[in-house]
Length: 245
Image (spheres, one colour):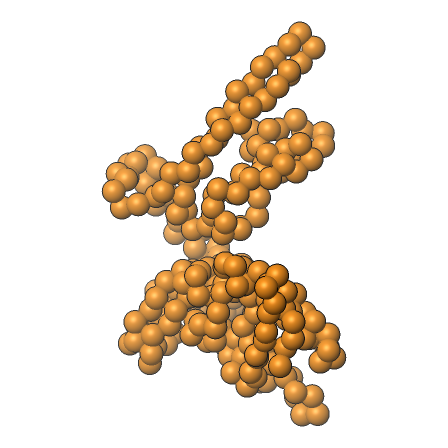
């Protein structure tokens, strides 16, 4: 029943990507794609009213309801047991996929990697709209790794990550013990960094593209740069990025 909507599959409901927008629906090739946000904050219920004729489907009418997942909703014991059964193995698999078998073999999920000297903000409303301490830490960690691995003193080097990759949606207090589990929660997508040589004018154009829409609401493309760089930009009333200074 739930399908992306390939042409040879007559499915009325599609699943979109990990977009954070709530209650968004689009018709993609005649297929309804219904997105309910991330991190399990919402559950979407879709009702289909299908009328048939002798030669097939006459019409399909859709309606939907969004249900907020809060602490007031009682746990379903059966679902809880299933989740508990599989979560431990899933988290171990994620650790191996993210760090590699050799590194992961020397780690545990609750192993503290650092005690935070100050608080960190990884809230979606922050990392997708403005500079934040959590995204600063990630970009600086990337720069440290690159600087330790690449030695080309003639070229300036910066690191950049878009806010949509940072998924924890949390505030960490100072003196918090940041663990392997926290890293996986914040960066759940096992992706490799890419190193590019790029002209400044093209970098500015790319940053402008990423900043579009950021004054209207959170956007996953919002760019975060390492601390060895500074970005100032202006926008117009149409929310187009006019210039990177």
